[in-house]
Image 1 (cartoon, rainbow, N blue to C red):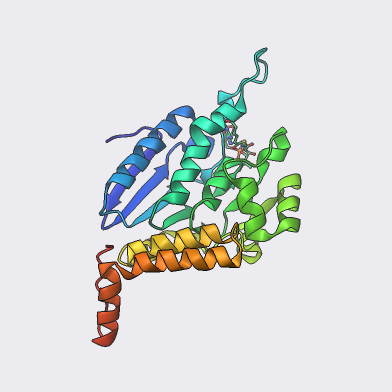
Image 2: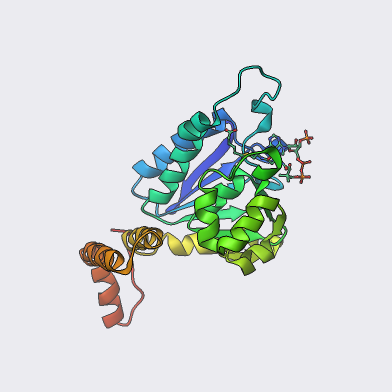
Length: 262
Ligand code: T3D
């Protein structure tokens, strides 16, 4: 399938969605949302995909909603809740529930819903020059696309408030120190590090990784008893996978495991 606002590629177990509107820092348009839905359909239907990467073309990762699609002069106000319902919220829900690791490779500025998109991914690897900006407050909006959910969970109440109310730029290194992202690397190392990370993830026990993701994401809303029960249920599922058998056999035979993702 060919797209015009994104580039989609899948090989060796790694699917890559590259946002591809560099002139506007890969900001979201309605067309891009439609193409993202189609790309997610492909990923969800293809059992050979064991890791999903989201990145951007050019000097930006994603600058959030394309503001040229909004008309401040219009007499009839647009319902932004409807925009979230139709476009942003389904995307974030799909990324969160995808039963395999999703990696944001943040090549440049991530602002507004672009920052939320990165933070919805399971691992965020950023170029040292990348910036994260909760730009919403500067135009009278609130962090959306899961931003108000992710921020306090990642960085705590005080920093979440500071970032969301002030909209200051957070450089990748500071984002790493805050715990907002997994890691930042020198710009010229980003592609290599991302490829290495995703190649690694794509040969791991995918079902197990998907269950880890489910457990960690559920944990902050659960009390200990509920989480212990959830761990029991998910571990039961993990224990029935052939990758678990392979992992234990490889350990016992002192050889590298060959996981099939099942
Ligand atoms: O509406 C709904 O559906 C509700 C959902 C809302 C979700 C949201 O994401 S709201 C937040 C929207 N995003 C922003 O407010 C960020 C706007 N952009 C910026 O603040 C800055 O561009 C950046 C801080 C991201 C980067 O600054 P800088 O100086 O590196 O680049 P620049 O020169 O501002 O931008 C480069 C070009 O990209 C420029 O175009 P030009 O002048 O070269 O033709 C700029 O207009 C364009 N661009 C950047 N962000 C957007 C954009 N065009 C449209 N929409 C954008 N969001």
